[in-house]
Amino acid sequence: MNEIALEKLTQIISDFTATVGICLPDDVEDRLRVLAGEETVPSAKTMYDCILRDIDLAKELHRPLCQDTGVLQYFVEVGTNFPYLDEIGAAITAAAERASREVPLRPNVVEPLGERNTGNNIGHGAPYVEYDLVPGGTDLRLRMYMAGGGCSLPGRSKVLMPLEGVSGVRKLVCETVLEWGVNACPPLVIGIGLGTCAPTSAALSKKALLRPLGTHSPYPHIAKLEEDLQRDLDSLGIAPLGLGGSRSVLGVNIEAAGHHPATLGVGLTTGCWATRRGEMLIRADLSTELRSHRGGLLK
Figure 1 (cartoon, rainbow, N blue to C red):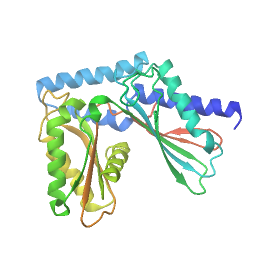
Figure 2 (tube, rainbow, N blue to C red; figure 1 turned 90 degrees about the vertical axis):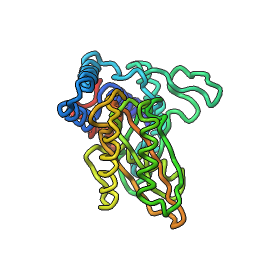
Figure 3 (tube, rainbow, N blue to C red; figure 1 turned 90 degrees about the horizontal axis):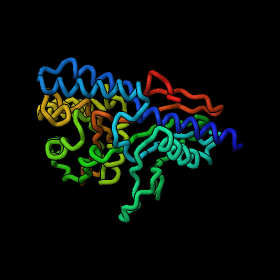
Figure 4 (cartoon, rainbow, N blue to C red; figure 1 turned 180 degrees about the horizontal axis):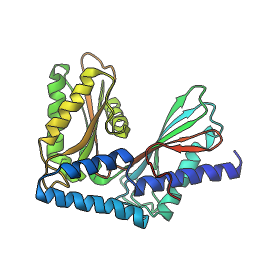
């Protein structure tokens, strides 16, 4: 890969990272505006006014909409014939450092257990990058998520006895959100993974969080559980910002995989009202399509 192409790929990913930090994805902003319009509790309406004002100011001032810009996580789905396959990791790392410096994004990465801040959001295993290869493909589908501290606190992964079934899943999710959800700045986006063991369920829950609001599982019984859990969680009335209101969640997404008959793994990942995620397509010629934000990439 020549230096010009590497620089272009790095700048694309840096601009993408900046966009995600400053602007909510369309589905999250649209859902917040719907909930704000439907809210009847006076204190909650005031909180929604503050949230919507924050969204507008971030765009106007070209600054992150939350001071906690999280730890940067990138999810790469790339074709094996994408011409810059070998350079993706280097471009992402350089882009994360550049965006952290130029936006700026708060440096959140500390060394494992040493608690020394690296100062640029780069460190051992940071940014986090996960790869999925598409045989014969020529494009790069890049998704990213800013994992803030508060919205990471409710994260859980547990293996249930299989006979606990749907009721066991609902109980674990509701108890977790009731105990920890206020720390994550509700209304929340809830990602749930169902699988065989703790790590697979946790990974599926993060993939669920990356899915746009308003989409549903292709499996009818899983889609029904999404609806039931949203109803369960809304009844807690902890939103917005934990001060009480009509809704607790923006949406509930579930990703499920076949599991062992002796286990039922459940993973839970939460996003705050400012669920900062994005998705873009980068083609072999380095042309792009931003799929998560109507306004295009910020420069």
